[in-house]
Image 1 (cartoon, rainbow, N blue to C red):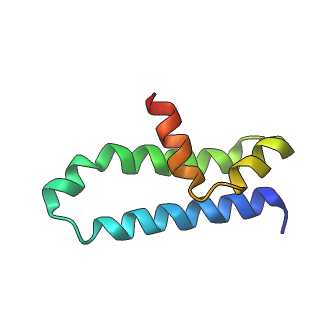
Image 2 (image 1 turned 30 degrees about the vertical axis):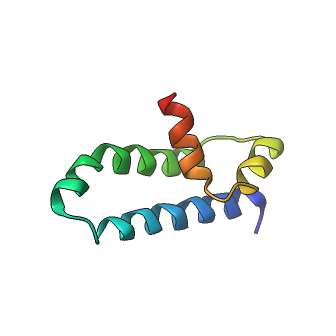
Length: 76
């Protein structure tokens, strides 16, 4: 498995954990997070399609939560 595949898996696992965590929240809180769900899902899919260089891939792999990092970076 190469680093890109590992990153995709890591981000998909992170997304699944995020969605699973929402299952414990009241419906209103989940509705308020709908945009975040959509953006994070799109980001995870884009990583599969985008070409990331070895440095970018390795940097994201080194993060505990690369999907959260990318999400926060786009919100700034």
